[in-house]
Amino acid sequence: MIVQRTFLFAFLIYVHFSRGFTKDDEICYHPRVNIHSECDFTESRQRLVCFNGFKDEWRARVKDVQVLILCVWPKATFDPQEILRGFTFLRKLIIANSNLTQLSTAFPNEMQFLEKINVIGTKLYLLPNDAFSNLRTLRCLDLRNNALEEINITVFDVPTLKDIYLTGNPLRCTEDVAWILDSSEGSAASKVVDKDKLLCATPHDGRPLVPVVKIIVTLKEECKETVCDCELIYVTPPGELTQRQLIVFISVNCSYRGLTEMPEFLPTDTNILHLSGNKIKDLTPLATNPAYKSLLDLYIDDNLVESIARLEGSDWLDHFRRLNLRGNKLTDLPTYALEDALLHNRNAANLYLGNNSWTCDCHFTPGFQDLLIRHPNIIKDINDIRCAFTSDNDNSNKQIRDLTRTEICILPDEDSWLHPLDILNIILASLIFLVLGKLLYDYWSFKKTGKLPWIVAKIP
Image (cartoon, rainbow, N blue to C red; front, side, top):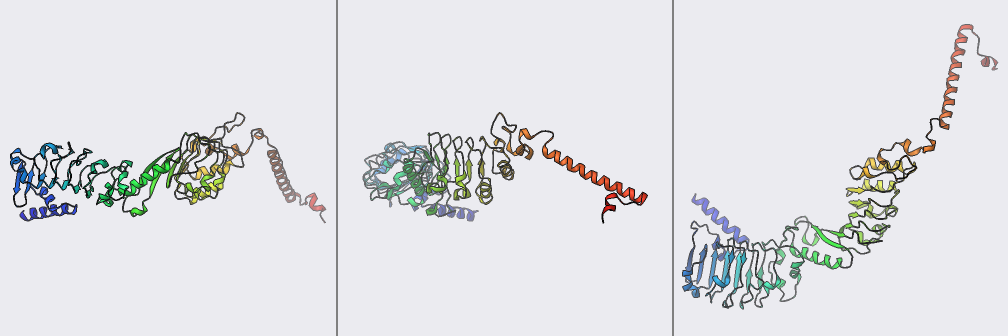
């Protein structure tokens, strides 16, 4: 049992040192049985260590304290103005291993010798913007392994501050953290020692913070050159690629903007583009504009697109993932080109072609119908792909997939009970039966009378 406890204790020490804890920090992680408030003062080091709170009886000796360590703080809040009153000569403060969630006030200005503050391993998520503004000698601020989701840059507005530690906090990767990109001398970002180790929280959980924030800031600037809304959807998780090779997925929404043409400019690495509800006719930019090189998903439903012929043989058609062409003015398309693209494009997942006025004739429809039947897993709205609605056509608004060749290739006025070809077939069949009948009669006559047929007798 003693060996197991010794091993457990050694393991706890290792874990906390591996997270960046100092020897003083590690004190708060010693296994303790007593849950009541207790303090221990080491006179040679002028160090006061308190567990489960701080009693007023120690205030008589606070001027002798230069290192104050508060472990397992019992309250959710910590009021520096009240609790640290009288610690005039304090040089180092550690608050660790507790359920502390917020500092309720700024540190008092009487603490003119305080050089280092460690608030580590707590649930701290809220700091006053002026929390450290009264400290004139603060050099190191360690806020690792807390619950800080966002930090206002004014918190670090302390002229003497040199080193800041922030790893282990679930920081939100938003534009509000853009200050971390400022590498100029004396900036708050330049003081963050572990900047390259910071990770994002949801929605980019576990991704490196600095590259992601840089992407977000760049995206916002580039989006200003469009009339669209832009959003960073996804970033590849660490481990799949190096930080310098992060792959991002960006969505740009230009729907219902009254556009008559596809945008000439898109933010870098745009993968998803929404153009629904505009008045766009031409899809040529997909094949010619480099801005669409990374585009995978295009939603251009409810527009005025009449043809996709310009995409034939294009690189975009060979790598697209989703294409929504519902509700346009399409009547036909290059079936062979689309068939070839779907066979060779491993990305192709969704294609929507419904609610268009498709031509139903013997020239286009059979090939188009075969395309629909061969790719039901990709063409998602096959039930809405119908013949154009016309009052004088029996195929009007019928599902193209279910049409028979007779319905497609025979015109209504040709669909009578006696077609000229049918008359010819009847005549030919009658002649065949007549010849066979005469042959049988001649054979019967020869067997009975021994006479050859008349025409055979006349042949020399």
